[in-house]
Image (tube, rainbow, N blue to C red; front, side, top):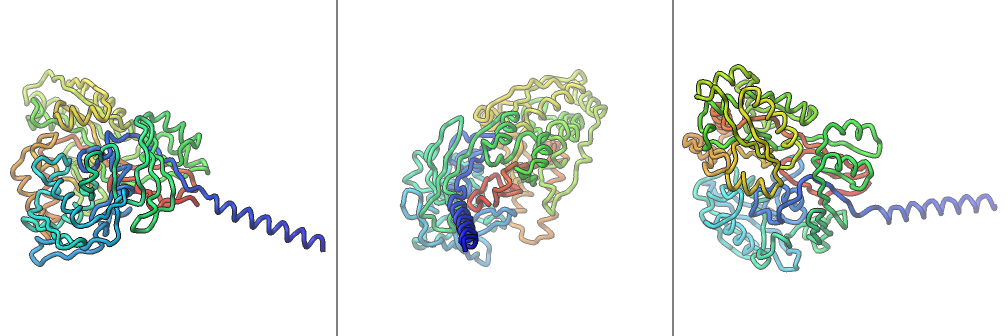
Length: 493
């Protein structure tokens, strides 16, 4: 009898311990990333780090990207498209509120889209909204958007972070106090250190499983390795030291996810700055680069070579790496034909990511071997945005374009690499109104071949996306179909 009571007591104690353990399951997470946002308004900056923190977590759009890159309903639960393809009527979800408690409705959608397409808009992807002719409020939960011509990518465009819905009454201080509709709300920003989010208890959709989220910013690869090994952070998305991944893979405390991205990593070239306004110089540049050496040396083998600005995992990708094969002798010959037999000097301005800093050192050495002296300047992200992206004050730079399906940026002559080709601009315009899949594929092939043949930029590799996390963290995105760290479905096992 005593033994039976004792055993029952032990079982009860074990059950109680399990229950307590379940009740005390972790509900907070510390996620590290390399780049800190310059501010917190995704609708007025090109910095992908803003979306990395806020996309889907804090801000939402009419549509949203899923982990597989599919375009899913967002704040709009459904839509109807007119027969001519010009009118989209969105039916919004009922009961959606902003984090300050105010209702989100059709007027906010109209404000957001009109603001994004306004003449004085600071939206970094203003071209996404250029085809919008009118935005009408039909009723509090219905919005009609009329386009000047059909655009088969319109629902895709509305899923970008640049198209999230904001409220006019909170736009004044959105850069430091973002107010969205997402499953998490902004709590605190210690600049230079971290951004804290907390669960939105009044969320209109499926509630987040986590109560608190901290985004920690660690730019140095060595410090990143130390922070993960010491378990000071629970996950590091876009881990910047690929040479350390095998060590984490061998440690049962961790999981390593190596996914694909939309990030075309390029040696971006200022096409209006002499001597890069000469296609022979740009072609010489391309043949001076050994992209596999860059992938091996800077990324430790992680990355897929590209020969144009298009993701290899896209069904319409054309392998054009042969257009820019490594051939230093040809590079020297082309430079001589262009009048630069003795080479020239230029600038190579590098943002903080390790692919840029490490890759920059390798590329500078490769260019030096053919007579091009590239003076390296290491810039902080805000400096890069000011000097290179907005100021166009550079010769060369290295950056990964992580926006999805963004070959259309080459149709914008005022974009920072300043490529102005009217025939390409017309091609992209034709693509925008073409619905036939076979014809779209043909246009996309021509688009890839055009920019590859014009050597607009040096095409390096498609960025891999390694994430190192605690083995018990579940629900993280493996791939990066857009630059986002969507934590709305993340939980502890």
